[in-house]
Image (cartoon, rainbow, N blue to C red; front, side, top):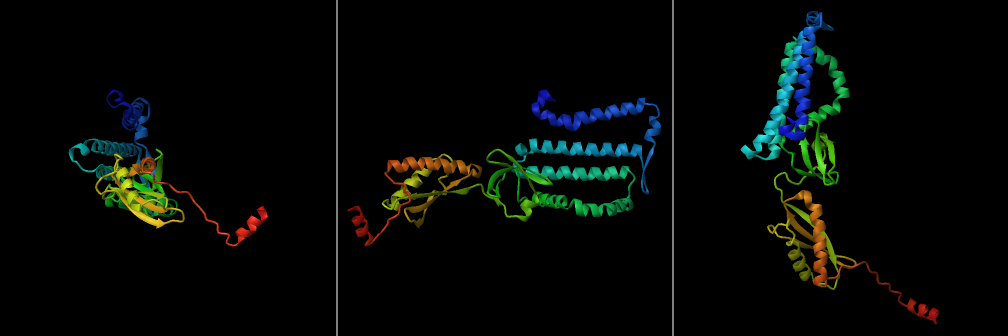
Length: 317
């Protein structure tokens, strides 16, 4: 496995190789140890429910097989479908995740049937756990339902660039409990799904990857606004990540106290690089303003003393 898959073989070792080795060791011990037949034929009493120990082992084995099958199928879908179907990566990831959890649910039903539990027994167990689930697992259930909503509605998919709590990041994984977002500082943030279903979240790539990047700037009052517009729009197009369609737009923001205030809007199709693009544009605009003798102002104040100048001059005399 290591020869073919490299470091990725670690997951196969954890999910398949090591558990199968443990199962084979346990099976050999049951065959060799004296009294193993009696042990397998023993029964476990849980209140009014009686479960043979052999059935318990079989149920655990079946559940494990379904868990492994769900994980393997998801890995295969994520590896092979993007090149053959041509669908978006987020859609394939959502379908693969749903398929995995469906297999887990089917495996759980089969395991319970091997234990000999009927609907009456399940109702008794559910009744006993309802209080604990309602109190202790309330947040977990809310996140579970939120994960189902995200997967079925496709409002959030792996690969989407989102902004939440003034942080920009790319969605790495959407699971049934939490969503993993990698920020621009290469940090993985685990966010509960309820944060995406109950709060306002900005999805920059939901239906269109082209977004506008805002670049505020100011020039002195002695500069012609038309010259500023021509220089800034021409300079913005020099950046390789700035799109020519739609073209850059310079909006006249306001007459400031010491400057003419503008906002440069540029279109990009890589929203996760907007901070870097804005920084690059400031560098380009600085050089362009120096070349065209456009002054970047600093705060100024005019002090009018009126008749007070006579008193100042008299003190100096």
